[in-house]
Length: 274
Image (tube, rainbow, N blue to C red):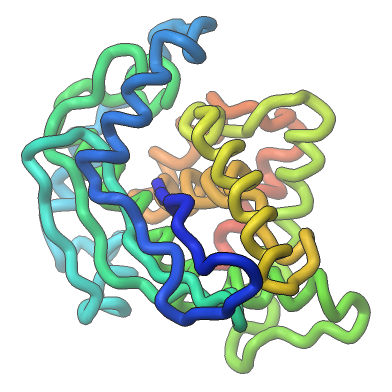
């Protein structure tokens, strides 16, 4: 769950010391304040027996993709925050390259408020199980940024038919771009995000803010990625990293047409390490 704030250089000044994330406590308060206003069509999602998944989450040698991603980015600081319930990946955005540098990850240890538990549809109730889902979500954010997926997506919009993936990404980069475009169509055709978390109004606001900023910095509006779609992708990747059974459960309860779910699963498999 990302949280860019609204700070930026004035005018068109391009200062590399740019958009820094809000503190996790401040961000949690901002999301919580909109809970009752926006999350009105709620119902408790079905439950998933998360016990075996949680055992794998706790065991670094279990072989689930989550631990492989953690090992890839072992130099990224992770810390817990007992004052809040949400997770955040802190980054800096460079206004010239639009590349984000990951500064660290903060994961709230508190239990989700009931209204968000209903909307997110994670299928878990225990706060430790929720923590595992949050951790998987945040490492998926880190992976997308540091492996180069988001950078390639931005370049693909600029380069069109001349686009070539970052060295080493190849098919995985094309799969990521295809998934982004597919979920964009889902959003346009249904008027909804694919996942409950991405449906929060804060991500629509973030997209609008980012479009405004990148234009101020001399880029095209298309250079600002849709934060709603990025959160959808991150929810999918995070769920997959915890195991295929949990991913299938989550996918079956998302706003994705049943006929497209197998395609989404194949795409996600191409984007993550085996």
